[in-house]
Length: 437
Image (cartoon, rainbow, N blue to C red):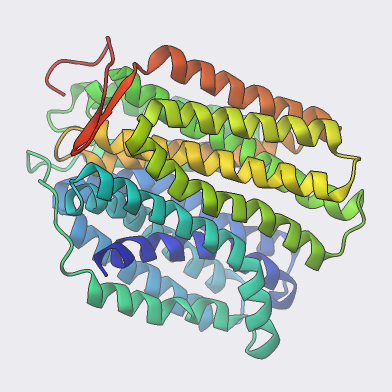
């Protein structure tokens, strides 16, 4: 029951990232309004997830998890009670705030509630597997609800689940809180503004916004070095294994979400599949992710996170290469390649999540997981923006292949061998890890 409590919140976060897309024609309004119905959630989520991790470390992960869930439910009610337009976008913003607090809190709670390595690996696999189910079920569930109840039901669906989570999550174990009572206000402001500018610039393909975001994030890093109680400890950024892991998270989402956007268009425009059959094809890829996530949890405990990350990255690269070569081939071959890609990303991401939680110092699991998921969100936005501009489908898939291979090389060179052992966490061996982390 505790595992369900800590995983169900992330399930709702991922469900609302996909379920709303099928409702856009029913919601109505101009193109710009509908774009912001989707992007308001994405931008706010990405901008605040690092701050959400800091809140979890400083004020308690369980309290933050409950607060994030309550905010998410409030945003869902706001969305359901509007007729569209600006108020619907405002509700999506509130949902994004709740999701940004909820997601890193859930990972911090997994680490503290399940300290045993084998059990922790299984719960992380469940955490990622449910996310894959949510991504696959979103469009299908959304279509079914639209047929019988209208688009407000897509948002009201979250409320009973939120109440359930609040009722069954009281037994979750709070991790140690971050030392120090001062809130890093400059860090919160600069990280939020910088990430918002960066992600919005990626979505809008606006170089000045991207440049402004990079500059503000540079200021954030500078301020972190001078603040007596920074939200992001500078030694976290100097930890070789953690740095390589968050870069890998960026690469995983950059290639995956870039190809997800292109595959959707390719199947309908070039293979002439109906929207329903396209959804079924994408569900095959999501099925690969559902299988890959628990496998990644098991393999990470059995063989270590490093080996599992490498296996997932190389598997995903093989799937992208198959899409590049066989795009015009038989549809079953394309579906098999999509399954392999989905399996590869969740195998690698589950292991990366485990390594992030292992590498984080006590009291900093929230901000470490927030850093990983921030890089993932930035990678998602940038992947769609970059790969979406590539003219040839096969060329874009080859770029995705190269991205995964480069990430695999980074993992091989920058993350030392891990030593899995029964009853003990796999210990990253990194020559450049700061002392006393």
